[in-house]
Image (cartoon, rainbow, N blue to C red):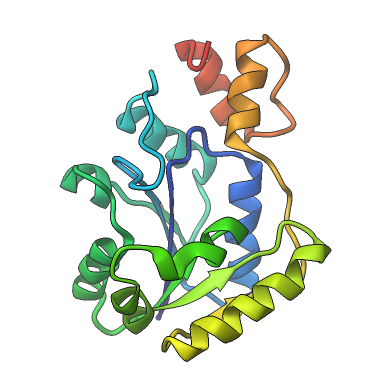
Length: 198
């Protein structure tokens, strides 16, 4: 089976995240996509009023009823800084027969060689990147060539997907603006019901 890890702070998860997961499922014929909210993202430790459990629940709502998509609390249960190499190692133990993929956005794809223990990431999983727009594709392709020299396997989407920023969504909520076009309906309802990001 082909299993992909799609990690992130998902603070909150938005429609761009969902479309990215769908796009790679279609391109690679993935059997299972694990949505993995971080406990503490090592690269952006920040104070937030939203708990890991609330971010986890928003992820579940975003993919509710979709076959092949599972939300995993593996990093939240482990606690501490959420290092991708550790999570992939755990997933390799859980799914020893599976081919593993790691789904990333453009920024993460461009910096992944600077992450903690990238050689373990490259050994365990094919690194998948997506451009923000058509202008980004050449940059990602050059980065892919560089990553190959480090032993990585890569896959790049040949087109961008819906570009949304979690920061933008939090700012819109704080200003009392509508976010219904940017997040799945069930996620929007959850945010408003619990007064998140106000």
